[in-house]
Length: 124
Image (cartoon, rainbow, N blue to C red; front, side, top):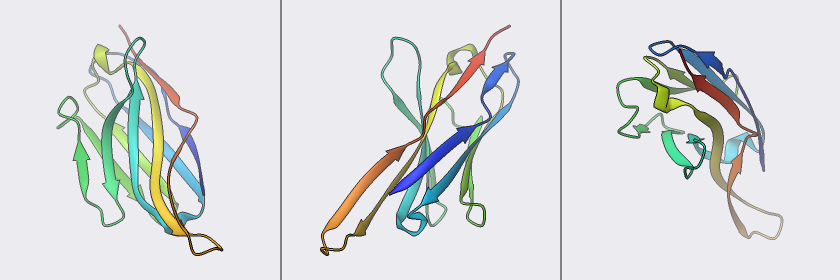
């Protein structure tokens, strides 16, 4: 299906910025959308932002106006630009690819593949 490798996490002060990257490989043409999720300690994983193959974006209310998702199709990479970071943005951030394809038996295979996650810590 699709393999994803995230990078760009780290430690930043409140009000700072980080850019996360997610490099995809494998069945690139089968991807419908790229997503960023995050999971803070003791909390459920939440969807942060999505971008479709056509470029349509959606954001969680908590990050609207501060985060921007984008993709570079030539590099098979999705990005999450995070500005004005807050303490509550601290979490492990996961990239995901959602898509589908027909296998050798002409059966439809739908998937959501995940990256390994990258830690973002906002602290003074």
